[in-house]
Length: 261
Image 1 (cartoon, one colour):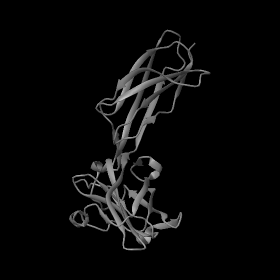
Image 2 (cartoon, helix red, strand yellow):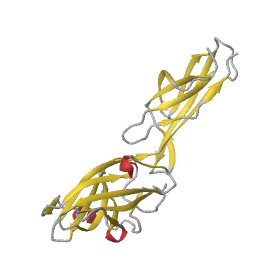
Image 3 (cartoon, helix red, strand yellow):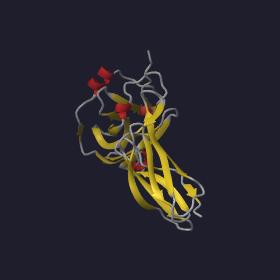
Image 4 (cartoon, rainbow, N blue to C red):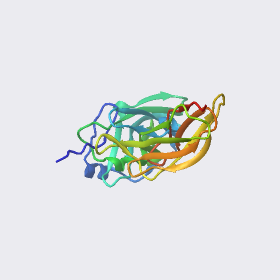
């Protein structure tokens, strides 16, 4: 029987610290006390977190908060995925570094990590999508602020795209066949699998030009394969371009030059 490898979610120096049921119970309602404010929360520089099949992917989270008494600490920073099986990436106060911006404001940062090769975890491909970033910040007085969804961020499955244009060289007016493949990380199998029924643009850049133009749109097959034909007109570079989806990032293939004679 095949063993399913699931995406494991880790904090800076702590492994997953809660079971699915325990983590769910640990979630509190948004709340706070006093005049403390949560000013800014940034995950991975505002970019999606893209995970492949083998490498651990680490990303920074920063939380900026203010209070008239000054910020004491950020108790935790937690990413949670809206999946059938509750998933959480966690950093507690021991993993969080705070820098005082002013007498009233501090910015606290932590690093969270996703490990697609870990033997344990709660989710596989269902982890892809929109995540919430929660935090709890306290001030030097009794003020505190807690948000389960201070901001959101996307977790995506790494994508790959190839292009091959043939024959090379080709006589002007003859047919060029352009093939390729669109695949993305499968966190359940630790392999790259075809991304099916996706619109992919075939683009061309004339030799000496600086930009590509779209020639046509091709739909990926049941295995992620791409294939179409064009008429050879002039020397240039062919490539496929995928715009991406909510669970998969955009990607351009390496170009393939065709000499037209």
